[in-house]
Length: 234
Image (cartoon, rainbow, N blue to C red; front, top):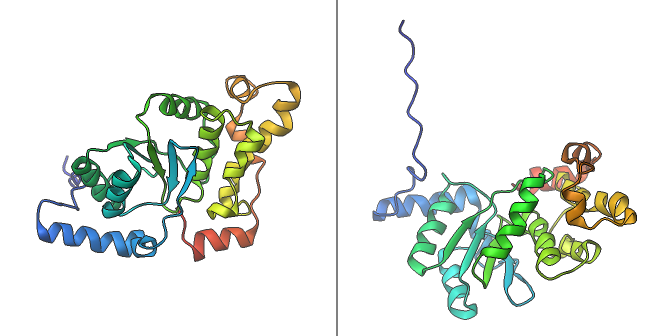
């Protein structure tokens, strides 16, 4: 039986060959056109949490070099995934050249973290080499989410205090679909904290239900339009 051949799956980063001048040029063109990197040349949305971790947006390779040289950054946490994208090709190459460890920890900006993801984030913060630079695309939503977990697990802040990491100060939009990230911690404060459970105890308990948390969240239409259609957030 004959049929249409199945096209071979692209190897990661196959479209972005940095070993040639032409390939590097094409990668930077894509980085600017499809990842809007030009908007981040003068704005990094950078904020320190204590003295060991800084949260930022997606950085250019030359910016990573500055963070290493000026602040001693040893590890970069990429929250975006995007392993076949131009930004990742450039970041992976830059980290290798600069001697930085690159940790890929993919999270979604419009979904509630699973139990396994929360426990994995805790383990990540306990084992990586500091100082650390952690980023998503804009430094607004996924970086905010993970900053709450860092502030709670590493800095010892109560969840209510750590949630200050999720605010418009960091360009996080609670009224959009990304507000489902806030709903995770709000549910803990409403249901589990009054019962005397720590955040970790709640996450590890049968009461923790990411699907139910997500189902209970409703974004405002204008927030959705702003983040998804105007700002085109991931």
